Length: 424
Image (cartoon, rainbow, N blue to C red; front, top):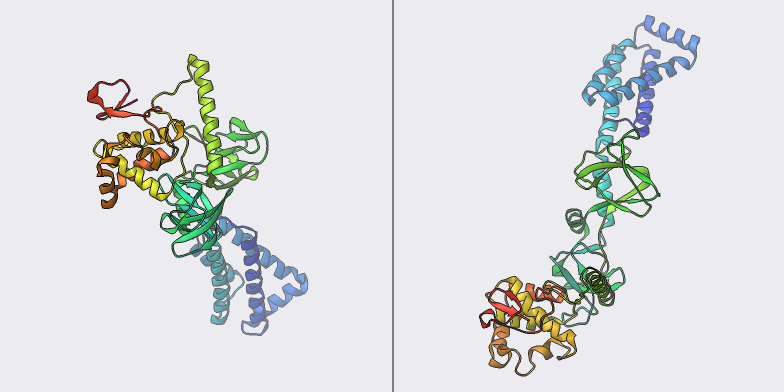
């Protein structure tokens, strides 16, 4: 148990009170005349020094005990020390024990884990926070309505500030996004904090250039590398805590940095607007095309590429999922996602209608739409696997590499074969 300044001060006050109590009791004649005379002589010769020496001895002993011994041993030692002052009456013993208990209580209060207090303080800061409890992403809508315009997305691990709470919808602000999210897909307060701790990395943000990462928590330990201001290091939360140091992960090893030059926090994300997401997607595609051109001279799409994320209403998403179930309901998630990707590739192509509904109901294109099977599926409900495939495609997944058509693989048509279907 480590003694800090506050504990030492508490012990000093308690010890002084004990010494004065003993002096007062013996000075009132409760003890023997010989003992009273000895105390008076000591005070006459030393003035306050006699009390100060006693207090200093108790401070020194208490500090040593805090570092090395249990609370139980401290109490025994304090009582043993009282015998040296010839405390013998029941009243004096009671006074000493009261002081000892006070010290013990002070130590016990200090013993309430600093980590627990710190954790509680952090939880309190999350009282007005919200996390999206989803596997992929959650739409943020302009109004508290499932058919309202989508203004952004909260991906798994994203955090938002609550601005208005309702029974079904909550208004939030996260990054550049302000809008409404459905309560059933969110968690708030302490639950959100615990969720973030479980699903988000804890990072140490570096505040100086040239911060050394060391192999062990010591300034004499070998330096692994140096990092720049603004860098984020993943904290090894399972490593044993070392005073003055933060354990960080470097590849598969646990290393250390001085806690003086880093700020440790949960690395939660922020919601993103559809415009920013589209811009990021286009930039990624351009980089990919440039890399392909540099390596092979061919920048054409390949199987497994991705589409731009698509914003749709809940009705469009359900319609897409229903078509998926009709066309590839028994072919597995990758094939179902591929069917959805074909629809979205047409939406983005410029050669087909520019909406999901327009593409699906375009004359002569999708059999279930004209045969009545699609309407029947919509009436009877859509499976969760079909909805998941639709959301994956809406989020940009495309196992086909940009295909706009599909048919049975048994036809022998060239293309990307997924299950019993070929996409081209």
